[in-house]
Amino acid sequence: MDNTKALIFDCYGTLIDWEKGSYDALQPIFQQKTCPDPRIVFETLGKIKARIQAEDKTMLYPAVLKEAYRLLTGELRLWYDEEAAEAYALSVPSWPPFPDSQDALSILKALGVKLVIHSNVDNESFEGTRKKLECSWGKFDDIFTAEDIGSYKPDYRNFHHVLQSLEDLYEIQPNEVLVVANSKRADIAPAKRLGLKTVWINRPEAILGVKGYEDVRADWEFGSMLEFAQELQSVKEDDL
Image 1 (cartoon, rainbow, N blue to C red):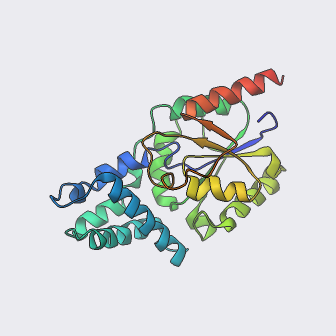
Image 2: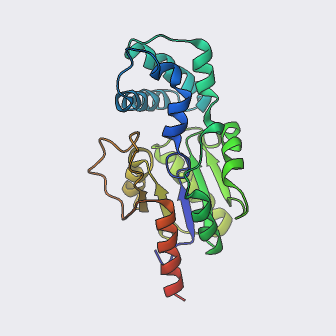
Image 3: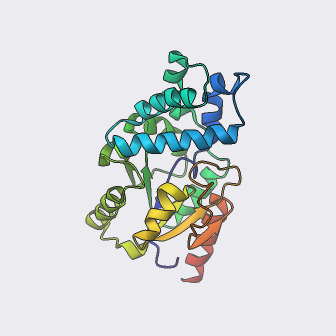
């Protein structure tokens, strides 16, 4: 960790509690009497979203969510409501940050490393999220979305795009980067296959991108973003 110059964050699930936000936005589904356990709903939703993103790499994220809502209700044999699907599609900006996100980002910003967002959402959705995350500590150095790149993680194209941008902008090499994420499917697994160093933020309630990927091991594991930030701070201070 001591040579780290840039941190590439998966925002949703790592800094933003996407499952809490999604659970709230999916209440028209969860309130139906025949709705299965939330774990089944999220696991099914994750598979549907991944399939849509792989089939149409340029579909904007709100459209992905709306179509996923429709297919989810069909697969689980639940009632479909167009307005509820639209509301879910536009819910990303309302998803809440994890309680430790601000403190962690403040520590990391003070270390002088580049803070880079690499997210599977669209620009408009992330602007709402950005307002929740960028506070007194400052701003992210760079933001790369699926809309900008034209494909969705775990596509290697997304990672190559970010890595090339870091080299062009800051002369930062891949061995000076840490990929910090909760999702093993979309981030940790492809990053490891590309030879990048990885940090898994093990959010205990996480389902999407985590369940079923227990065999994927990151280089480091922490129980929260704050724990990771404090450890990197300690490593950097010892290196002085």
